[in-house]
Image 1: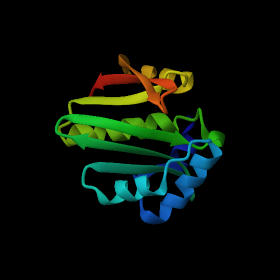
Image 2 (image 1 turned 135 degrees about the horizontal axis):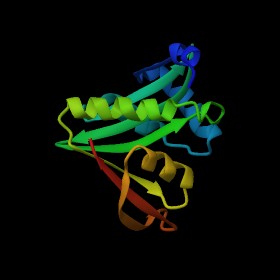
Image 3 (image 1 turned 60 degrees about the horizontal axis):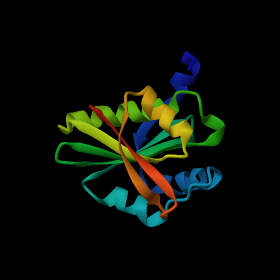
Image 4 (image 1 turned 120 degrees about the horizontal axis):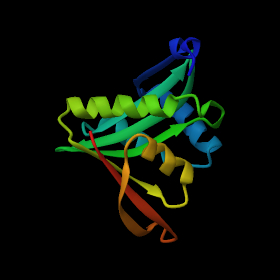
Length: 150
């Protein structure tokens, strides 16, 4: 990512007024999560939600939970037109930093075995496949549990 782009890019905590922008990104990416999930992420002390912004445009988000010493990454999503610019990596690094400050030791996630882009993304950042969850996604698609130390 070039320096000009980095200066225009920021990560901020998700606010209620940002939820509609994230839902639009979900819709564009054909990956709709229910509104209630975002509301829960804003109201639960165990959830952490962040957005990526370029200038005044919301271009991505990361949601994760921390329980005891584990960080569970629920999702990282970046608007299709802003992918491959380092935004997902910056969101992930920000989340890992926060989880470390909250004394988390492990981080894990579950990704569709069919989602090669996400698998490659997480592998790039040191995640390894730890287990297979047969039929995890609606009983059709297997989930891959990926894990790494923070």
